[in-house]
Figure 1 (cartoon, helix red, strand yellow):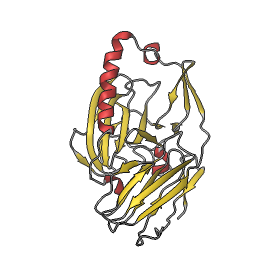
Figure 2 (cartoon, rainbow, N blue to C red):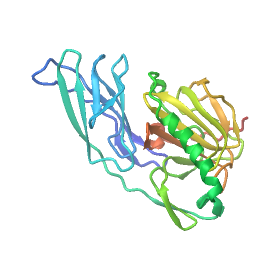
Figure 3 (cartoon, helix red, strand yellow):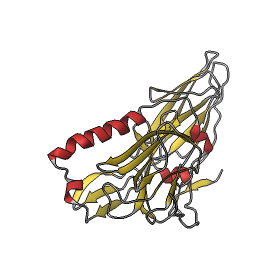
Figure 4 (cartoon, rainbow, N blue to C red):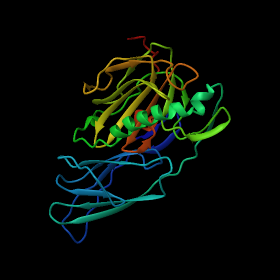
Length: 285
């Protein structure tokens, strides 16, 4: 298959398939589809009923033998997949993870309170973080991710995954998603099928926020919106309207921050969505 390309048009990695015959146990199959690179999501396929562990941690395996592997920003240099087949056979596969070089992004002009919160803000931030962490602990059997991913809004990419953020001159944690600049009121759509797991009208950093559970521990987050168009528990299909671009929370201008995580491992959404579409942003709401 052809390689994935980011919104900037740089090819980072390709999809591939491999088959493994465990020895001396009866044969079984393992296929991996996705980029073996920092920030990449890999979809694995093995025999139904098999048990899978990645670096010793058990992974959910669907009735069809599907499982997920996520490589964070600092993952590597390798990961080991261990499979126990229903007939007693086993297989191990060690894969190499490609290292990436991440940019440094400087953002100035933010309100000082959004960079260095006041003591009275900390309790609010703690509640916000607890809500987000709760969604990222979900491990549901649904497989909304099978719909594939698309960009939730079209526009210039103003912030890339993994970049070191320097806010008002102060080094902060690396950026854990992508930012897409678009006019206020532009429709934001679900990047993949799933169930709305969280909506919040005003988080300290992220403003109006939506999170979608795509199954198997995979979730996506959409922040800084001006309006939320869905409710918690609502099932959405890929491309369904979920909100509109805004300027809420910690931001210097209208844009959508879009993040994807496998449990608490942040992934690069651009690797999932492929090239940015050429279509103009749509007004909605």
